[in-house]
Amino acid sequence: MSARDLDVVVLGATGVTGRQVARYLADRAGEDGVRWAPAARDTGKLAALLGEARVEAPEPIAADVGDPESLVALAARARVVLDLVGPYTRFGRPVIEACLAAGSHYVDLTGELPFVRQMIDAFDEPARAAGVKIVQVCGFEALPADLLVALVAKTARERFGEELADVDLQVQMTAPPGPPQASDMVSGGTFQSLVEVAASEGAASVTDPALLISDRSHAEAVRRMSPIPLAPRRGADGAVVAPMAPAPFINPAVIHRSVELAAQAEGREPRAFRYREGVVLAGGVV
Image 1 (cartoon, rainbow, N blue to C red):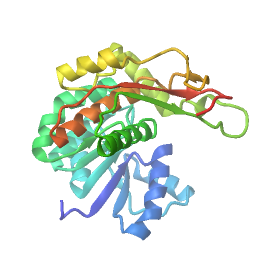
Image 2 (cartoon, rainbow, N blue to C red):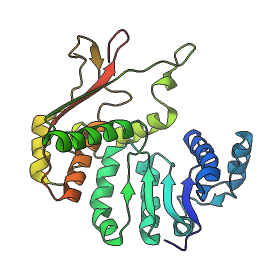
Image 3 (cartoon, helix red, strand yellow):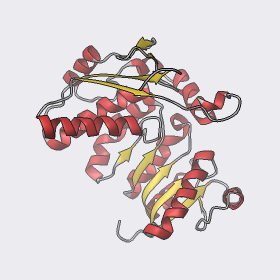
C-alpha cells in the first residue's frame, strides 16, 4: 500500500453522513497530513454539495456501485475505503469485492446484520489470506458500546484477572431543541436499512445475539446466557430502561463477535457473558 496516493476515500460523500465525514477529514488533513478524497457517482453534484457546506475537499473521484471497474480503480488508490452508500444489502457487496481485489481495507456503517453475516461467510477467509481488514457496523449506533465493553473486559483481565460475567449498559439521550421529529430517533438511512432487513431472507435471524459468531459452541453459550430483552425493565436504581434505539438487535451481536475476535487474536478461548443494554427514560438515572 505504500505506493497509494490516498489514505482514505469517502464513497458516498453526497449524503448527510458523507458530508459530515468530509468536513471532519478536511479539518484533520491540515493537522495530521491525512490524504483523502470524496467519491460519488455524480462528481458535479458532490462538488456542489461540498461547496455549499463550505468543505474544502480534494478533487472528487467518480465511482458507481453499479460499475465494478470504477470501484476497483477507486480502491486501488486508497489504503482505506469508507463506504457510506446504503442500504448495504443492495449496494455493499460490490464495494467489498473491489477492496479485496485491490488489497484495500474496507469500513462501513451498516446495521443490516443478515448482510454482515453473509459477508463474513463469503469474505472472512479470503480477506484474512489477503491481509485485508473488513470492518462493518462501525457507526455511532454500535461503536461506543462496542469500545466500552472491550475496554471493560480488558481492564477486568488486567486488574483482577477475571473475565466478564455480566454487563449492563445504559444510555440517556437528550432530545434536540424544538418539537420532536421522527428523524430524531430514526434517520432516513436507518429507516431504509430497517426495511431492507425486514425484507431479507435472514430477517428472522436479527434477534439472535450470536448471529455473527463463527464458533458453534461459543454461539450456543451466548444464546443461552445472553438473550436479547425486548421489553422495558427496571434498572438497579429503579429507573425504567427501554430497549435500545433505533434497534435493540445491533449491539449485542456486534459485541459478542468482537469478544470472539479479540480472543482469537490473543490465543485464548472466548467466554460468553450476559449483555444487556437500554435507554433510560426521562427522569431515570444513568
